[in-house]
Image (cartoon, rainbow, N blue to C red; front, side):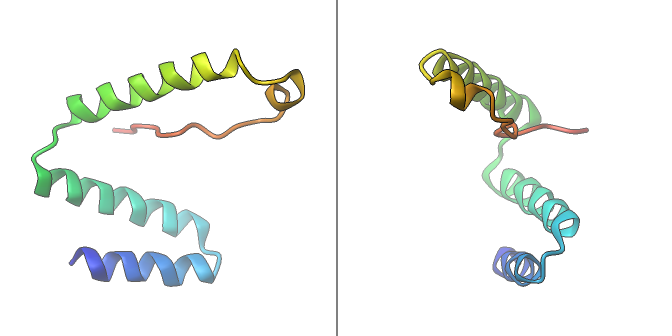
Length: 78
């Protein structure tokens, strides 16, 4: 099932259907979490840790790099 979903995501990505690709990515993540027994609390802890790491990395970037907008690494939406 995961292979099929990932193939669909790849095809949609090639056709530049961004919103659908993002929704499918969330569905794939949800399915993988269920298969691996990862709960929402564990995912939230990972996201929080990644955001803390990204914040500390920002201190080492040049001002030019800091001025550029950056998408969040992961965002949990429920």
